[in-house]
Amino acid sequence: VDVLAEIEADIDFGEEEHLVGDSSTILQTLDDIDREVKRLLDSFTGGRILREGFRVAIAGRPNAGKSSLFNLLLKQERALVTPTPGTTRDYLSEWIDLGGFAVNLIDTAGLRRKGGAIEKAGQERAESIIEEADLVLWLFDISAPNWCKLLEEDRKRLDSKKLMVVGNTIDLVAEVPSDDVCDCVVSCLTGVGIDELKRRLKAEIENKMPDLTSGLVVTSARHHQQLKAAHLALGRARTKLAAKESPEIVAFELQQATRALDEITGRIYNEEILGRIFSSFCIGK
Image (cartoon, rainbow, N blue to C red):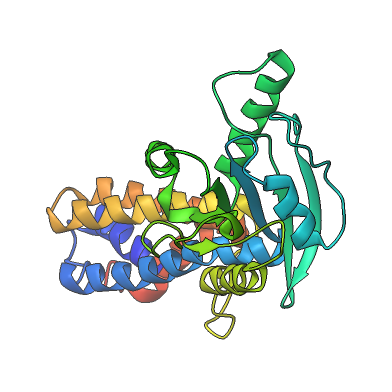
């Protein structure tokens, strides 16, 4: 508001006297404001996890052992397990406590090109869940023929930033895949590797959690949207100010940023901006 008041004072009274200070000082102030806005933006992922829990999708090709892994992590027989591909046609969702973190586990339908109308509908829903998940456990049967080639095909269409490749059926192979191929290896039959998988899951959650000692944390999607609008408007204002464009254009962008923040903190009336102008500058003296 102070920066906006200074620039609007220059627009209204600039012909009478020079009001706006060194643009580098204003730019530094805008940088400081935008840095805090960006910090709040970055806190949203962790803030949403605090409010809604950490969403983990168990996904992969049919018969990879997804439902078996789901049951193992839940420690109960929640999902039906059969050797028939396409048994899971819809998703199953349950909550677990993982080291104090609320984790929403989602067992999805196996993804493949074949299948009937019902199975395809389940696959479409699985793709939507994968898109919305915080982490995807991509389960793969490492005892299957050509599994490395199939895994490479899958990697090309998945978001690597939230993907954890889990090799299943470690009890059926003589050689353990390297770490650059699988992030973790398990046996859904014997339970080998499940504790290590849980440890890695907990570490992933901790990496995404905000630093609660650094100040406020954003948990509202609406607030996140308004902060993003403010961040973009501040960026445009800084660019236009640095390019020495007219103060009217810079003021417009700052007004956009202010309005976005008003949606979070409460409206700032025009009278307040006018008050800042007349209290900060000696107009007409």
